[in-house]
Image 1 (spheres, rainbow, N blue to C red):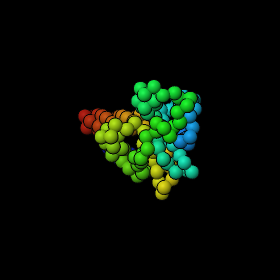
Image 2: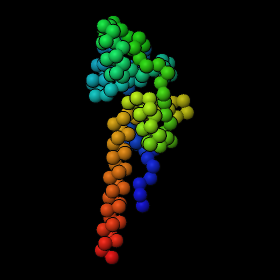
Image 3: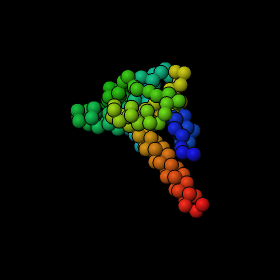
Length: 150
């Protein structure tokens, strides 16, 4: 049997649902320190447990460094990406890949019933697709080998 469609829920079950967040008032430097500590490329921006934005390495490079702002003085709220696109756990990984490609996103928060339940990155998507392809190749190789030995 060939591999079935993988969902966001399955990816989160494998990688875990841990997310890291800051408030809009946190300094960019503190947010970057958190990102470095956890070896991640983004943090969610929450205000009263409500998602109000996302702060990414791209936000830092394009909205702070190129504008000559100071990371000690600027806040995450000054440079974050507001109006964050989110996905649900039931979404198929192929659909996630399309959303990321069309919108040039590298990080998508996962929301279920108004609650953040994880985040999916472009790396997660690529890994999942490679895993699916390896399973398909293995299945087909076994099928062909079985056909040749009978």
